Amino acid sequence: MDEKTVHAQLAATGIAVGAIHRNLPSPELTARALARKEGILAANGALVVNTGRRTGRSPADRYIVAEPAAADVAWGGPNQPCSPEYFERQLRRASAYLRARDVYVFDGFAGAEPTYRLPIRVVADATWHALFAHTVFVRPEPVDLEGFTPGFTVVDVGALPAEPEGAGGAAGGGAASPPVGDPSGAGGGAASPPVGDPSGAGGGAACPPVGDPSGSPVFVGVSFSRRLILIMGTLYAGEMKKAVFTVMNHLLPARDVLPMHCSATAGRKGDVALYFGLSGTGKTTLSADPSRRLIGDDEHGWSDHGVFNFEGGCYAKVIHLSARAEPQIFQAIRFGSILENVIVDPLTRAIAWDDDSLTENTRATYPVDHIPGAVPTGTGGTPRNVFFLTCDSYGVLPPIAKLTPAMASYHFLCGFTARLAGTEDGIDEPEPTFSACFGAPFMPRDPVEYATMLAERLKAGPTRCWLVNTGWSGGPYGQGKRMRISLTRNLLKAALEGSLDHVETTPHPVFGVLVPMHCPRVPPKLLDPRSTWADPHEYDARAAEVAQHFAAAFKRFAGRVPAAVAAAGPVV
Image (cartoon, rainbow, N blue to C red):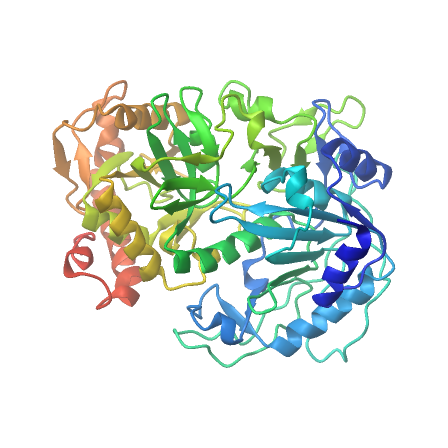
């Protein structure tokens, strides 16, 4: 496909650009990023970049265009509407900005399974953003690029702030990119203007009154009718990844595929395991297991034929990364990878993995095949085990518990965990939250729809389901201690090997989940969270408090789920 054809396709979406550099290989993209002073190379060969003020996602600035194609969106919470007119105005500004600029285009796919994959096009004026897309999405074969037609287009102009409502529709073209921050930490990147509060979020199932965003320089807009994603005012590359995930979560249920915020691995005999959880709960870390083969680290679909990765790369949180604790991830970060907001020595280029002076949310992007033994097709069979990873900052949940099918539906709908420092703008320490489906910010449809699909698949498997606390033990955050990775790995190993299948369990007195009485290579005392607290009565009070939070979070599903699911929660 020649450049003229790509120009014509972009023009049809309302975008005019300068010269197009399409699907350049990773070494060339890295070289151009260095030449454009977008980053520097670390000693391990990875490209190190600084995203400026925005070092995590900006969920308050993500919008879905209120239009007929979004009729099945569950409005409210993270699903905020904006008007088609506002989206169109920002798109015109982006087009004016890109009209005389070179752009870097990635054409590829979301979805490793050919039957369900979505052709996507990423258009970016930052070279390293094109490298990010090349690394994290499914890369095409040369034959795929002949006659390529995108099913969705991502227009990524992170250096251009969004226009506040009422600003008069300024063209905004030709604005200079902000200076690139120094990854050594000596000087920060250009700061974004202060964040304003978006208005008009509304609530409820019906589309609330549409209030256009105002005040914030960041705008992440999704138009299902235009099949466009527009990203403005943030250089944090994770916005691209999660916006595409949101689109897949909207499209796939109509094709009887369950989209999931989870990692996936396969055992040596092909047995598949899924690990659900929000960022920082251990999806990537625990799926990087030398005894198993990685299918993917974050986003998957579950069809009648099995599971498939949405991506071709991994996006790992790397604060405090070490070769000893996480050898696979440590070795995967090399030339062809990207490091976001890590500090490196300006002379030796050695990486200071423990330095959080820019953010706790330091990140690495690398191809899946940088992990030894990764499944090259990105696909696997029907899962045998499903793990719900919850980072319990209260320290009251057991390190592992077996869930009945009703309990699995209940905990999937609640999605109890903690958002960790840096993963979202404004989060500075663990913050307890309930995120339906362990990924509410990315789920446009009603959570009950996803939960119903999961329940059907668990039953058909049959698939065992476990609740795993990767958070605190012996007390809440600030008093207790975070679960050791080695302990969690031993618990998962026992479940995966079937060692817990016939172990006697006891219902937790508050949460009702089935706690194993013993587990190989794990001290029995650690299995009972109450016994790890210095003051058992303080534990009882805190557990009762958390049970009340569960009940409050589940209220919105009352009357819309089977009675057995509603009764599967904690004792209040």
